[in-house]
Length: 161
Image (tube, rainbow, N blue to C red; front, side, top):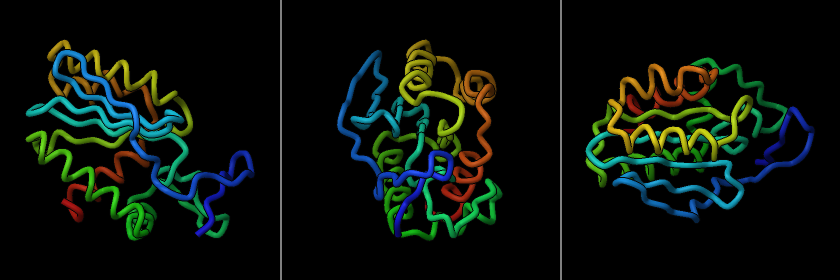
């Protein structure tokens, strides 16, 4: 399957980016790829936030034949793609290793309105300050339009986990 950025009309990465840079601050682990388009921030026993830009989780990174709407139904179709399914399983394994409760995992779509690395710093600092996960998702991340991320989170928790 060819991935295509429907905004810039250019080909995009055809796989999930490899999380290659890792940092730890105040027991908060942050993994991010070289291009800063995909990031996983984990505080063991507390929560996990998955941030993604233009990569296979985002709606902009698909063939021109697919018209993703951000709806749960279209995201379910996306989650049937083998690369997406495999990555969701890896995220589940990471959360379980970190003893993160299922309800404290969220995927956040940064592909249209925010830089993944900047949001990662905000999330990392919030975790480091022991801000409750509900406050992080309800206030810290509330400024992001996250229809796709919320739909993927729901599918991830209900069907992958």
